[in-house]
Structures are given as C-alpha cells and as structure tokens.
Image 1 (cartoon, rainbow, N blue to C red):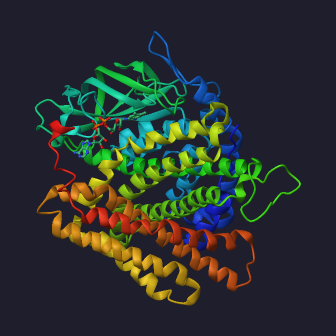
Image 2: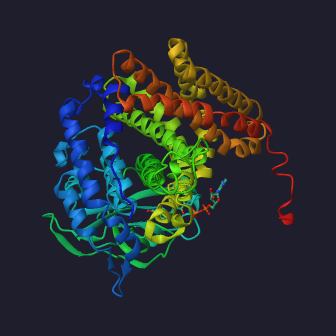
Length: 595
Ligand SMILES: Cc1cc2nc3c(=O)[nH]c(=O)nc-3n(C[C@H](O)[C@H](O)[C@H](O)COP(=O)(O)OP(=O)(O)OC[C@H]3O[C@@H](n4cnc5c(N)ncnc54)[C@H](O)[C@@H]3O)c2cc1C
C-alpha cells in the first residue's frame, strides 16, 4: 500500500529561505502568517493530509462514485466525513476573506496546503479545489448579495462549487456553446442545456452545490463574445438563507473513467433552472478566467503532487527491493542481492523525479507569491509586474508540471518492475490519476498555444522580456565559482529560449503554422529554463548556508540535485530549440487523406 509524507520541510525552506515570505509583510494577511504561525498551519495540514485524506485514496479508487436512479450520487466511504472535517477545520477558508468567515491568509500558504491534499488524494482534493475556484470567481465578479449568499456556506464546507463549461460538441472551442439563458422579469435567468464532464456536479458531501455555468443569453452575439456566466444553485435559497425547493438541475449520468474514481464526473442537465448573472452580460469568459487561472495553477500542482507521491513510494521500494549486484561491488554482501537503489539506471529515474519535484514546488511557491502581490499590493507597478508573471507562467505551470508529472508517475511505476503494474501496489493508480491533469483545464496543447499566441506577444512581449532580464541579472550577480555549475548551464539554456523567441517572432507571425508547430516545444523549453532558474536560486541559498556552517544532509542534497538537473535535464533545451527551428513545413506536408 502506498504511503505519503507531505513535503513540509521543503515548503518551509522555500517560504523562509528562498522566497523570504516575511519580506511581504506589507501585504494584507502576511503579518498574520508569521513564521511560527505558518509553520504550525503547515504541520497541521500535513497531519490532516496524511492521516485523514490519504487513507481514503485507495478506497476512493476501488469504490468510485455511484449514481442512483433518483439522480443522487454517492461518493466513496469516508469522503463525506473527511469533507466535513475539512470545512470544520477551517481549511476551505484559509485564504478566504474574513468578512465571509475566512482567515484571509496569503494564497501562497493556501497553495502549499493544497499540494499536501492533492498528494494525499487527488480525487478527494478536487471537491475542495473547485469550491475554492468558484469562490475566487464570485469574489472578483459576483455582486455583494451573491458573495454574501454563497461564500460563507462554501467556506464552512456546507456548500461546494463547480465549473460548467464543457458541452458534448464543445470543449476547447467554447464559442460553439449552446446552453441558453432567458432573462426573467425578476432579473433572474432560466438556464437550459446539457453540460458534460462536470467534476463534482453531483455528490453527497454537501447540502447544496453552487454551479457556475457558462451560457448564451438569447440574442447574444455568436461565438465566445456572446457567452455569460451564471450562478445556479442545486437547491434554491430562501430570502432568510435557508434552503428551499430543488432547482431544475440534475445529474443525468456519471462517467466511468481511467482515474480519479473518487471524484464524480457528471453529465449535468439544466432544465429551465433558475440562475443569476455573475458580472456583465456577454463577459462570461472574463469572469471564468479568474476561476480558470486559479484552476490551472491548481491543476499544474496536481501534476507535481502525483509526481511527489509516486517518487516517495519509488524511493521506498528501491531501498527495499533486492535484485542484482552493484556494478562497483556488493553493497549489501550479507544479503542475497543489493537493493536496486544502487543501480545507476534506478538512480537516473529517482534523481530525475526528485530534481523536477523540488524545482516545480519552488516555481509554484514563487508564482503563488506573485498572485498574492497581484491581488493584495497597493503599488500599481508591483501589481502589473506580478500580473505579467502570472499570465506568462500559468500556461507553463499547467502544461509542463502535468506533462512531466505524469511522465514521472510512469517512471516511478517502472522502478517497481512488474509490481508497478499490479493494482495492489498502488503505483498504477498514480499513473491513471495523473493522466487527466494533462487534459482538463485546457488540454496541454492549448497551453502551448496560449503561451506562444497570446502570452508571449502580449504588451509587446513585456512579460517575457522581464523574465529574461531577471534571469540574466541573476546570472551576472552570481558569477562566483560556487555558482558556476548552476549559472553557466542556466545562461546557455536562457540563450536557447531567447533564440527560440526570436525565431518565433520572425517566423511565427507571417506563417502561423510555424507558431502552432513550435508551441509544445516552446512551452517545455520555457519550463526547463524557469525550473533551472529555480534551481539556481535554491543553490544560491544552499551555498550561503553551507558557508555559514550548515552541514545538514538536506542542504547538501539540494546542491547535488540541482547539479543533476543542470547536467542531465536542462540540456534538452537544445533539442526543443532544434525542433522549433525546423518549422511547420514537414509536419504539415502530408495531406489529411494520407493518414
Ligand atoms: C475527468 C474529467 C473532468 C472534467 N471536469 C470538467 C469540469 O469540471 N468542468 C468542465 O467544464 N469541463 C470539465 N472537463 C472537460 C475538459 O476540460 C475537456 O475535456 C477539455 O477541455 C478538452 O475538451 P474536449 O474533450 O472537448 O477536447 P477537444 O476540444 O475536442 O480537443 C481534442 C484535442 O484537440 C486539440 N485541439 C483542439 N482545438 C485545437 C486547436 N485550435 N489547436 C490545436 N489543438 C487543438 C486539443 O488539445 C485536444 O488534444 C473534464 C473532463 C474530464 C475527462
């Protein structure tokens, strides 16, 4: 049976030493998360994830969700009680505003707690993740009455949230959406249509479900510019806040799927259901983007979290499993064979996972801090720069962390040999669960296109140029011998990224297929450079700590793992660059009939 240990020490290192959390004390909420407080929160969250949430992971996979004839859906044994504890323990309101019952703490802290929950049980954590995303959209775009009506109960864990975009004929291309909304005399709307693949669309964890639904108001312009966002509760709410009659929303069926069995994936029928507009008419995508950016960061983290838990179990197995002898002579001569961790090829797999996980975690923490600055700073320039960062790196985090995270679950499964393929070891569940993260919240191909087509050229390339300048300045300021193994490869990789960017500017605008053909490679090239930058920043801190007398294995391992990333993983930037520069001609040459 797999186990999970929340990476608390790593998060503390990142918050305290690498990103200097306390320097943000001028922002609302940060002073309330002083080191002792935030560390106590992280320790408690780890305990909850390890002791309450993780034990439900396998049960959830085996049992799955069940839809009953009356449309009710039951979740696996134990989920309901754990969700109740999540609400009662204040975990759903960690970052929510105090006026609605939340604790107003920084998003950065909330994201680290979220990683622990996702690593413990991805399917379970989706119910709370989507609730947080729905709250975020309502907080930014909802009316004061809507916020007051929905958010306190969501924070308390009494009501959950969902996100309803996808329809049978439209997933990526939401402009094709057909669900319609008809305005009523009292200002509400009647919503009719079918949504598919709705996570947590029906469940038995909460007494109400707050559906955020995209629909087209009668007479709205065609395409994406005619889509509006509505809030549609499963059960209507009386004027005094009590629950009233059932709204016209029901679950038609649930999907049988590859992974995340503990999370219900529902076909949702909206049948003249009553909803209220969130934000402005025909500006639904703007409102939904708040939720989507939040959700994309969360989905990127799912990739990291599955990679982390798979890695931890692969390490334990590699220390235990005896096969063959070390190439340099027996390491456990008293045993019939050496543990497989002595073999360089097993080390290659473990080090690759570890080097990715630690840098990816740093990237998420760094970006979460930017999110806090973007939302909480009163300095317009700071907000803009943080916003640039978020816009540019959201597709990179979503696409790269889920692609590599999934690949790592397969690599961890491989460490188990045949046992990795056998269900009772639990490794194949990580593979199955991690796979969806590459698909939903915008398939990863679309993340690459978003990066190349929208985020890169936005504002004349300001965000990308800002990032390149920051990395170059870091390299210049850290030219000493102790940093050479990190900074020299980082500079080479940055050069590749800049060449690729220049090539896209020259060849992508005139021939858009060149940009489309380059997009996935460009996203991964960008990801490698930003992860290398994270390693260089961590190496700086580790070197300083060692110079100051820190002799811990933890700090020494940081330097070795960082070097591994630079030597063994970062060189792939050259391959990505070569692919990008080969253009679209050959890739597009065969006529469709030939396939
Ligand atoms: C388990 C699960 C849970 C989900 N949860 C939710 C949820 O809670 N709410 C919700 O609204 N949806 C949800 N979804 C839906 C999910 O977001 C969509 O499946 C996803 O966005 C892709 O849409 P699609 O399946 O229609 O694929 P399509 O849009 O048909 O895409 C098929 C392929 O074509 C590629 N493609 C499409 N257009 C282009 C283009 N212009 N250029 C290049 N490539 C392109 C895509 O990258 C993809 O690889 C969920 C799906 C699953 C399976």
